[in-house]
Amino acid sequence: MLKNKQVGFLGSGNMGEALIHGLLHSHLCRPEQILCSDVRPERLKAIREKYGVKGTSHNPEVVKQSDIIVLAVKPQIMKQVVEEVAKYLDLSKLIISIAAGVPLDAIESCARKELKLIRVMPNICVSVREGVSAIAGGKHASKEDLIAAKTIFDSVGKSIIIEEYLLDAVTGLSGSGPAYIFLIIDALADAGVKVGLSRSDALILASQTVLGAAKMLIETGEHPGKLKDMVTSPGGTAIAGLHTLEEGGLRTTLINAVEVATQRSKVLGEIIKNNLTNEKA
Image (tube, rainbow, N blue to C red):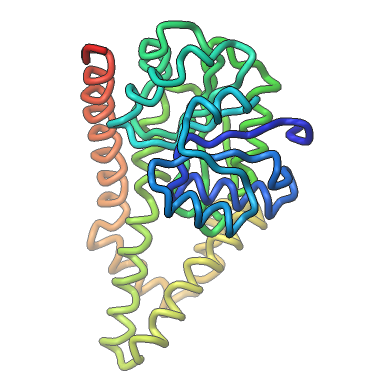
């Protein structure tokens, strides 16, 4: 799928580097197939030396030489970057944006032309190749383009293909989700300390428990309720703990957190869209 493609990254921050690492680690690309840009010379130097890829400070050079372009820049500078390279963009190039909150039509508006666009919402866990990403195709993106995007993001975890209007919900669940889980792990470790464990042991026990539970759920394909029932026994410790969690409203609180984060994502997306489309060139 990517064997003969040149892949360009506009922006070589944490997300850009994670994707470069994933592509190389999964042997989907060779270093010479990847060209990246960044405004920071020291960052480009570090990426080139670490991964053996090509680097430049000139965004147009990346676009001209690439078949697939990943827009890995902050939403605040998206307009500036797209306008800088717009003359080199056309429907022959697949453009993948990972800029949070930037809708596909806003990117086309900045470029003042129709483009072959895909928008992706990854999460921070791509940095350890265990992320999850949601992929939404624009009107000119073909099935093959979506498969190419999925191949890229599967190299850093798992990915799903959805409609663009659902990306705010994805942001509320999996985009913000690592923060929820970090809080839960921290709380579990605090609990371990309270009942006599050392902080280091409690953190290992809590984090590995979350990892193992997630892996068991994924690999068995069982409903989480069924797996929960496997842990609980009549009058046992797990059911006593679950009763306390339900009494404290954990389930409702998590549902509310996802819902509030989703609504906040919609508000921020509207602000970003208005800023992009209303700014004067």
